[in-house]
Image 1 (spheres, rainbow, N blue to C red):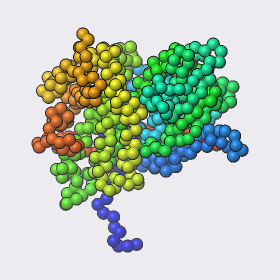
Image 2 (image 1 turned 90 degrees about the vertical axis):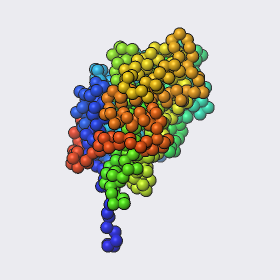
Image 3 (image 1 turned 90 degrees about the horizontal axis):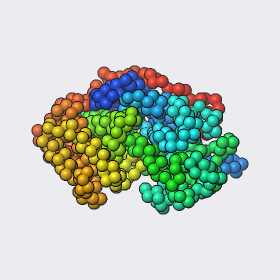
Image 4 (image 1 turned 30 degrees about the vertical axis):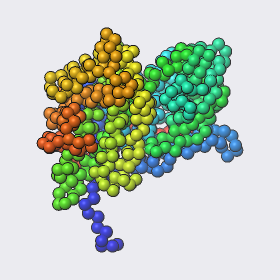
Length: 578
């Protein structure tokens, strides 16, 4: 061995640590927003995801990507996707934690907050499985538009087992739901879809139909059933499409190809073809968008949580690195420019986490029968802003690692490739801003709910008070005054709404230093445009002290099995491709 190959000044791996124990904003927010009863489960998942064994599973899941098998060796059409065993292990952990179902399985105060915290911790590992997990979670309120389908399928969807077998759902312990809306000629404009639905009999809600058409994006095509949109004589309608027919034979659901994506590689996304595919109508005929919007509303929440988790995952890697790496006779974290950047990243991540948990509480409030107006407006506002901030946050965190962050051996490069996805899924930035305008114009109670939330923090910061006053004027009044700027100014408007919401939470709940840095840079726009370009005198020391952690102090010694995870069936399931 060469004597020149002594490894020095490299950061030790960040493994076997509790991701919950090192996250003060999460610990505080979980209790504050009504999810304190879920602390043990969130902490246990933090141990699991932070373990070295789990990180190896993530590596394997990304090393062996999904493979489409359209035909068997005899030429029979099978339309199955093969996944690595590591993928199935990741899915087992997610379902075992109840991320797909907690508010439906345990509908009590704080359930959405606990589930959001579980997703937030899980998402700091590998987020590929969150596509089918999120769609399964979000499908439940949409399915309830058709009671008989919901009565049969919801118990399967909320079960915490993960059954990987590709067999009829009635023979499985649990099931997964997907969604297929996008067509190549329409994209976000689903009313441009051309898929046709022909009734088999009388038709109407709950009726049987045959679908014919092509869907440009269908993620997780090995789910057991899908919600989709197709045209009838009365307009665009919502349909339930199972992979197997009631008699146990395969439905005519043809996977044309898998997408070669920038990121999210472990998860399979596909194009599918409907050719006389059996389906049942969900909800009223011609009201497909109104029916499936319940699913969209919940999956947009998933985008917010996933992006915040990406931010946190990248920041933790950067913070761990700068606490160990030395340059110019000092640790990186001791150097002023790095301290400014680390403090700014910490504030960005805390603001995102605070907004995630507050919006999740709004879902709890709506489920409990309280006014859902705040959830209606805050969800797209948070979706727009956090999904914009994630890429910049991940990039700056990656840069802290230097060249080590740019290679695929560590998680930073994967996080960077994955970061833009949630900004596209369930509506790109412009679509989301238009949805915010729609809510403000058609549901004026959402404006009132937003302003009531912002009013709760007034008086604590003159910069914040000025922003709230300007929003109050620009959003218009209930007397019919229009929203300032209209569509042209919608991005600026929604950005200010998001920043105001984050500021209101930090002013009320975060340490003064965190709120001060946020106010100086996001409200008063002192400093520069890039992250870390803080104004002179910014209180970075207490911000960094709050974020910093000693990995050895929270070392779990590999105790990654404390969460209740059900074992993968190694019998028939192991022989199945899915």
